[in-house]
Image (cartoon, rainbow, N blue to C red; front, side):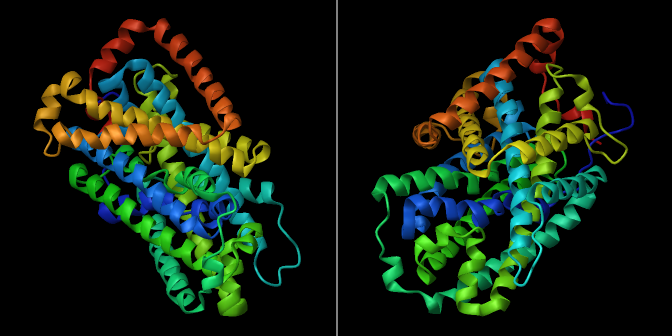
Length: 448
């Protein structure tokens, strides 16, 4: 073992991986970004959600194939791209996905305080930035104490969240208004497509189960189910809740609210409904925040194991957690909380995810040539006519990437440029050692 007595610990079963994956997916995306998307798609926001599920399903299939080849920590974000595509493109994928998790950690911390402030009768509003920093610190401590602590809290939050959203949908159905559902999309189909491009943020994260390959029990089975359920559960809840939301109140009111789901519930459940939805939102947002800190830390850890980034971020604390990687992830989160805006950060995050999805699909297409031995042994392959999955995924992901807008693409390009500086500096200083490490698959270096 490369790290003495401290190693990662295999603690995660199917429920835990699903709870972490879907917990990342269902959070600020549904309770905050849905309202932003409604400004473009109007009453057809649920259609935007359905469209957004398509590229997610495609990248989910590609991720499952790569995971079945070789489950590994940081696999989907960094290891598969570096070993299958190229050192440089793979490093940028890991670098991009680290930011793609830091952004949502900041967004969910702010979103939690926004929903606290939405409590009926609350006279004094909390400072959003200060409250978000406190949330980040609390969950930093939870993550520091190990994956077992994370697992227990995540399972509780996830199950409560799913039950709450199902109740929200069922109780809202009798109150649908056909007039509201028939309101024209404010920007036509272009607006629906723009809504879908924004709502990718709400789906972003389901493939990240493959970044927990060394902490999952029976990872081939566990992560395959985690990714699969991470697609199905959020897609049903998203489409159903968006349909109800823009059918109970006009989409204009929904889009204008700081806590849109609470506003809807108040129409058919009164003050109790507002409180109920706020509690569900708390569970959803905190499960997302918790899981994002967990996986974001593992991405930075995975990206550091080949020593392009400082080896300090590949160290593991006495609880089996990449401690220094967790510290830097939390510190970057605090910086974004203080300086960022939710919509801009969300658009940047989506751009980072889409870049990673493109690289993931490319890896699937290249795997038969660059990793033929592992590919031949994989029980599930996307070759022959099934190669249409990664090809279609690339085309759709590129189209959605363009829709993120020039500002998001510019900031994303700047972030990748910073990553390029780290890559070329770190790689050139120890080229032979890095080349040797990247020819290896790192799972056995840290697994207990």
